[in-house]
Amino acid sequence: MRIGELATRAGVSVRSVRYYEEQGLLTSTRSTSGQRHYTDGEVERVTFIQRLYAAGLSSRTIAELLPCVDAPSEETSDAALARMAQERDRLSGHIADLIRTRDALDGLMATARAHRETLRAVPAGSPTL
Image 1 (cartoon, rainbow, N blue to C red):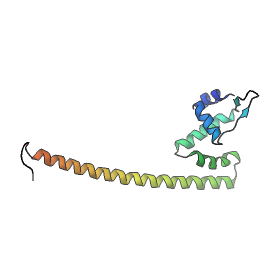
Image 2: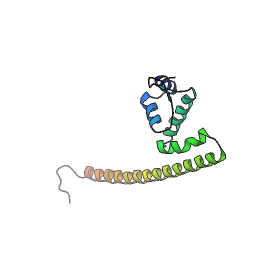
Image 3: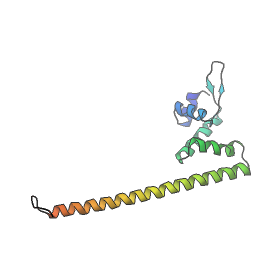
């Protein structure tokens, strides 16, 4: 199938398919006129790649995981699981940072609300100390 059909069947843009190929995540054959051609199996591969992106993985990380798909073995499976665990740890650290940032913002909002209440308690035009 040609690139447009693959994109449609996988629910992605043609640009995404080209990007996946540039990143080495997907391969195609070329016709004599230079058009890309893909197999039916590439639809499933693009869908899988989309799931990996949705899980927050980079194209580099996805490339490291694909040997487990292309040549499944205990060794590639162990490597893929270890790499996914690293990514999970990275995401957990990022989540912890975001929680700290949110908590700091909550503190600032509480301070701003308390200050606003003190402004309401002072009649307009009254001197403040």
